[in-house]
Length: 297
Image 1 (spheres, rainbow, N blue to C red):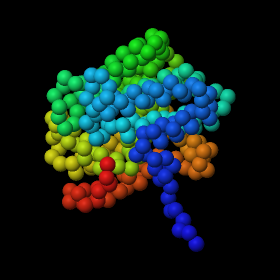
Image 2: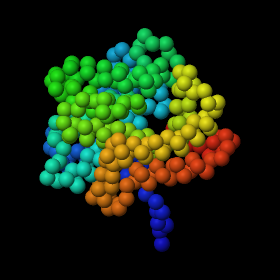
Image 3: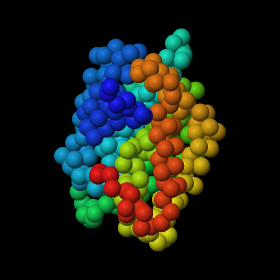
Image 4: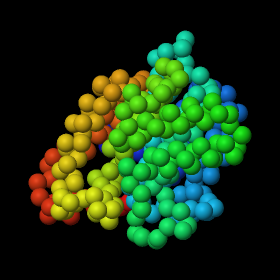
């Protein structure tokens, strides 16, 4: 008798180490509701992102961040596509408009490029720009990129509004959304950003790199990586509150996706995050950090 798999992980559904495999799954979620031909331009834009992150885009250095990297952006795209799929499954008579979903996907593709350094910037191990400045730089890049490719002023403003929700210090009330659909897509982007980050298999290991980025930028004064890991327990409580209150519980739409596409009757994102937090709570000392966080990234 074959051994049964005791738990299903997100990375069993798609290879999270391959941005191309993830993007193919994003496409699969998209074409359940929209024409496949509409996805073709998005693939070209995603390829531009890969060139940008790998140092082949004019004017930019290769991504040096081990936290806000291509895997994170890809996983955010995937989480967002699952929320969209789940919402459309739940609301078949009022699905999201094709145009705004495409604009939201473009916004997500470039939502963290503000961490990248330009060619003229000093080369260091990690990034020059932090969470307080990167959002404006991401918006600046997005605006220029879309303008050069012939997008209208209205389309660019919509994409910018949706992207703004990914700012760590941005409040939804500060964003001038044009309508409720735009705001809902923005809440889904912000939610997907956190879902992807905290459900990523090497999340805890990546927090170590985030610590060194903070330290280099003069923002981490707490002493050790262990302190940052412990702060993550407090961060989790804050995010839970954001999910329910600020973002109207849109994370729940992921469950409809997993039910319909995989026959899994639970939200794998929330299950994964809760398991990660439980594991983190069990780490009692700095020595255990070095011993237990060995996942390769």
